[in-house]
Structures are given as C-alpha cells and as structure tokens.
Length: 404
Image (tube, rainbow, N blue to C red; front, side):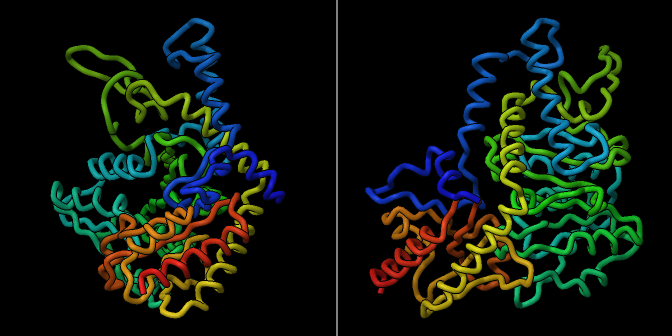
C-alpha cells in the first residue's frame, strides 16, 4: 500500500494538535473518513436528497436507488444470501438491542440461558441483563485464559438444553483477541443454538463471509470502518428474521394499518421503522468500496505489522503491562504503566499530539476481572505508519518521565 497516498485521502490527518502533527491511534473508537466518503455525503445532499421508497418523483427514485444499492453493497461485502437479510440500524449497539428485544420476545422464556463472554463490550452485556430483569432469563459467561483467549473447554461445558442463544465478540475491543467464531458456531449448531457475533471490531479488519462462518446474526457499525456515525448493520438469517416481531413501529415497517389491526411489511423493511439514514447508507457504500479497493487483506497485514512493531517497542519500556497476548490478535494494544494512572498517560500523550483511548473502554466487567480501573489503548488503522508508532513510543517515554 502507498501509505503516503492513503494519508492524503484523509483530510483530518494533515492537522496539528498543540502544534504537533496529529498521531491518531484511537481507531477502535472511531476511524477517520476519507474524502470519497465526505464527498458522498455532500453529493447526496447537494444532488439527490429526497425521502426514500415513498416518493414517485425523480429525486426520490434516485435516493431510493442509492439506498437500496447500498443494501446490495453490504450484502456483497459480507456475502449474505439475500438483501432481505441486511437490516440498517444506527450501529452495533442498536443491532444487538434489536435482536435482544425481538428474538427475546419470540424465543426466550424464564429459565432460558444466553451465553456471552468475559471480554464483551457493555453493548453486548446490558441488553441481555435487561432481558434478565424483564423475562427471567439467565446470563452465562465464558471465562478467558491468562493470555486473553476464550476458554473453549469451559464454553462447551456451559452449553445445555436451556441454552437458547450465544452472543460473542468477533474481536475484543480491549484485548484485541480474534475469537474462533467458526468453532463456536459449530459447537452451538450441534444443539441447534443460534449465534450472534458482535463484529464492531471484526468487520473493519477481517474479511467477513457470513455464509462461511454460518453465523445466525452478525452486527457492525459504519463509523469504525471509515463510514459516518449513526449507520450500522444487522445481518440475520432470513429464517430468524421472519420469525421475529418488529423492533419498532411506525412508517415503512407496515403493510396495512387500520385502527383495528396492523400487518407488517416484508423483510428487510419490517425492522426499519421511520425514515432511514439513506445518506449514511450511501456514504457507507463509498466506505466499503474504498476498503475493497485497498484490499481488506492488505489492511489487515499492514495493521498486524504495526501491532507487532509497537508491541515490541512497548515491551522494552520498564513497568509496562500489556493486556491480551492471544495467538490471533487484531491491531489493538491495551496497557498500563506501573504506578501511573492511565488517564494521566492519555492526557500527557494528547499534549504531544498523540490521540489514544483511556479508561474502562466500556468493558468494566473485564477490567474487574483483570483487577485494574482502566487501561491506555492504542489502536491502528490503514493510514497509520511506523513513524507514528515511533512518535507514540517517544511521547509515552516522555509522559512516564514527567509522572515520575
């Protein structure tokens, strides 16, 4: 990849922070946007902006074509069987809440069990806890090994006749662990249990083939893969989506409404009440085109190189503890410095132009398990460079000197 050319395509990277060149290493929280995505937003509003599906006029037809073309683009990107299986949401969090609400209403009863893991983001914990309170289900948790991998033997022991759903992260946003989704799905399907995969940290970095993985649900957010905020995807096998009730009521998700009864629209519209973010969909289409033009395998290889290089450099600094040393790991490094609060490290890095994430990373149960209040996290994207990794290391060493 021509990294210099790629960086020129992301306008925000040219700026300075506190008179220092911006080193943006907070990509697991959100990625920056290339000009083609920004232009897609501008073009949609300047040339074809009109509400979709309902209008017979020219602009509405063009907008609808852009929106539904985006659905087909997503289908291709993850290799779903049909566009009926692609539901647009506001992001990963809403997608999980949709499944928890609708699947929960249709299939979960008191005493049923849902399995998650110890490394989950809050968005894949709290919706199931809410269902615990509402319907009396039980949440079971897959433990992790000391190097930050799922304990698959323990997972197998959790499976039983009461298990009704498994919901796990593809990639941990804290540890960077890439979980063995295909193995988990195979074990679950032996007893006819569906699997939901939180792909917020997976889809931006790994080639996703939902048919090859045989997942029942796969969810991800546009803003973590160079698209705008507020747009995301729920993939669901058609057989499950057909059997689940709507998540919200309103326009578009109906077939016919009377004061006596409402019948619901066909898939995928049954789950898309109200005016959708059609401009976000068009911009996400541009982002997916951009990723595929670069090549997601090239992106993954580049990010892995940065991960290995920076991990090696970090390991040379006295007092550093890195969390997550899985055999299969994505471009995330979470760490602490002995005797220094992660917030202080993050603030001092920021003053030197280096943007990282600090805190519990919306994974408080994992932090409790690790016995820490939070971490410093550096996370990589296709536009990061080895030179930026060196600047990060120098800035970190300076921050440590200041604190000590």
